[in-house]
Image (cartoon, rainbow, N blue to C red; front, side, top):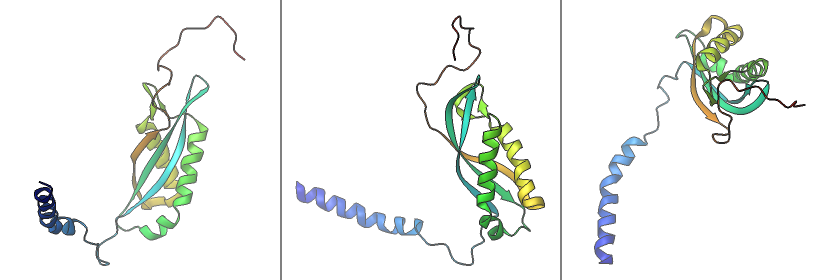
Length: 153
């Protein structure tokens, strides 16, 4: 019985070999490089009613025009990351319905202005590629809260 299982595993591995090799081909040096800059994840604070509620790690892609020098702007990625961190510190971009995500249209519009200030006419558009919340559980419920009787310092 063990011999049958071993033969079945070996045959399936042998048959899957060409399929795996086809997927893992290395790209050639002549392949065009995408016209974009991926900004490393930045923690954007989510503030509700003046209190820090959560952090959402946001990854942004700055799409460049076809005539832009992508390698030049990839070298300037720290400037884009710094602009995103400063933008997150200026105001809250939290989604009013969910404290585990950002308000994507507002953040994209604000970061689009910052990216154009950095790269000028080479910026085509800005897209949020990933959002990862630091906390998913234990967050307060979004929406208006009833007033409290006690005074909180």
